[in-house]
Length: 250
Image (cartoon, rainbow, N blue to C red):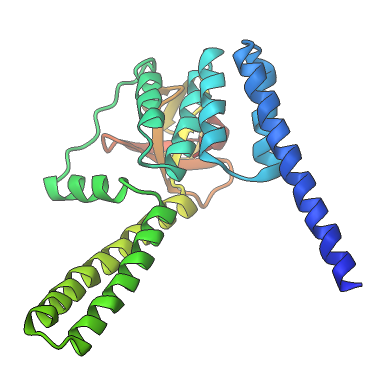
């Protein structure tokens, strides 16, 4: 009975895998045939039924870009970049889409070391850093064995120095993987999807008008406690309140 159940599960998994491959193939074919509306529907369906994928988000972003829906193109490029932060193609297309938005917001300047650490963190995905940490840990154990059991002084020195260096790599890889995971799970970033939004001083239509932003602009949700209003921060530091339906979280 157990053997029969195992066979059934294997058949179901194989069928699901084949269906997933066929769905993506169909979506890709629709995109190549310039049927972008169909491609968008199929890519959205794949995400809803099979979960997140940087590749699918990227293709979906391209489809929206082809239909001149720049806001949703940026939204999906941003989602793809969260899952694959080192992908140069995603980053290039995101910047190209951003260049077509009305609001060209200049981010606040950062200390060089902060920018460098962020760049290093984004050089690999969460799974990439996790793999680096595991491999480095195993190599560190090998170096410790060499240090403890090595008969020659030179081997002990190599083992000791190697273990120290690899320990630093292990700790750094875990810190970077944790930062990547936090980025994916928290997702404080959002994209303006309404054509024009007036940002208010308070979470109410009667609040003072602070500034206007347009679709495609990236914001960060500072206060998510209210259902219909969200306090947001722009990349240049400006803050205010806007209706929740005007943004979509990355």
